[in-house]
Length: 375
Ligand code: UDP
Image 1 (cartoon, rainbow, N blue to C red):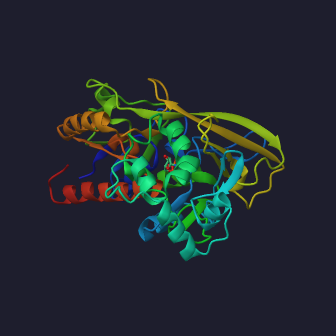
Image 2 (image 1 turned 135 degrees about the vertical axis):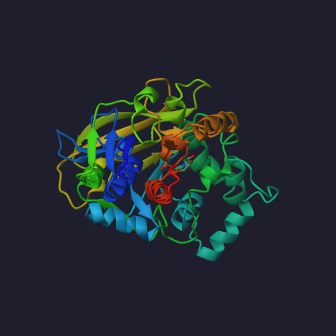
Image 3 (image 1 turned 90 degrees about the vertical axis):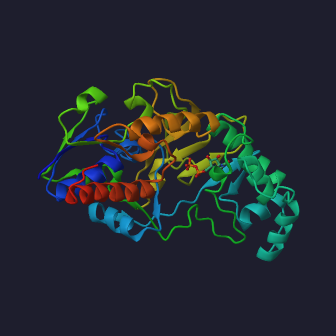
């Protein structure tokens, strides 16, 4: 029997689940509070320069998941793109993630890979057997000098708390390399959609079974009348913050333009605590196949997320995790609603993982229907 499902949020989760259900013959309504689809990976051309802007900050597609890669390539033409990030620390520019070039630049050496490995091993704090925090993870693997030059200040600005209080898992996102590979990601498949992410999400949503409503916030009371709801908004928001608010970091983007090439790369990080921004993004370098004389840049300044701000990064400290588990218990008892995506599950998710989870979630729903035991 045909179902009518509501996707709250037109980001990757809502679009991918909606498409699966529509292709299986169900009716899908996708509602988003904003005036555009694609959530935080939304891209739009800057009116002044014509540059494709990553409106909510830089998004680079990278994955090892061949099915997810095939999926996105069904809906967009991807251009080869490798993220090569630089960082400014104490008035000098270095290569990131920390690689042999960074090590040799920073210490003024010409070490070969095995020499560098031994050199860094001698700086690492081996008394830390099992690193518990971000700080311990850094001290254990790169030592105090590199930690203080590249991670400490940046992380303080990014998360608004000491790296001592953050989980080691955040730093584990970054590799440490003893060769000159400066590719920020180690994934097999990487690229940038030629016409931006919004065009890709529009293509995913372009199906006769899907209707999209923009500028349409959905509250819990509006969900009645649908056979199932897939909610990709903030999990605490669905319950009207009744147990309290989960902590997020938000970002202020200070836009500026430049006649020419401002920094020569897409992303320049700023490691020092005294500089307010964590990074400056020069958007035209995300589309090197395009030619723009002018340039538009975002200076990115993180701060605590207040009611009404856009939530970006979930702060998963001990207190938040406890509150989250109370919300997860409420969510599990919520009939006919599945919580999905970065905000719905309050996790730091890359785009490829978001799509993988959405595919799995949509398939679970269809399988449960086929078995006569709807979710
Ligand atoms: N990080 C850092 N210095 C840098 C880049 C990253 O200390 O120059 C830390 C920071 O705490 C950040 C984490 O490493 O949150 C993960 O970095 P990633 O680039 O994955 O962050 P994202 O791109 O998700 O903002």
